[in-house]
Image 1 (cartoon, rainbow, N blue to C red):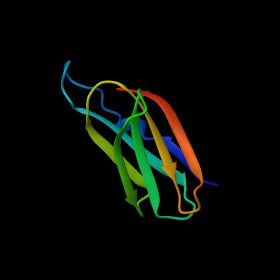
Image 2: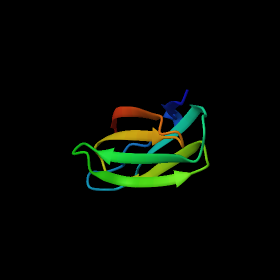
Image 3: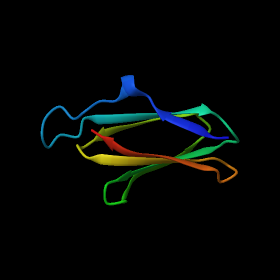
Image 4: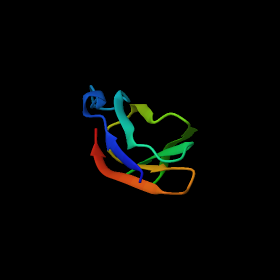
Length: 87
């Protein structure tokens, strides 16, 4: 089973209004079958970034303030989500 989590020490809130200095890191705590697709969406469900990788961790950075959701999908199309990540 695919299990994911946000890496809290890597969470960076935006420094000043209007800047894009935020960061969210997602780990796959229990890997399944790679490669993995990491998708970051903003609060309007617009995809901000999408990456396919064999890595079990990914850092989304240079983000403006907002509320985000992350979806990780493995090669078997198993999918896990983390919602309402605020930076």
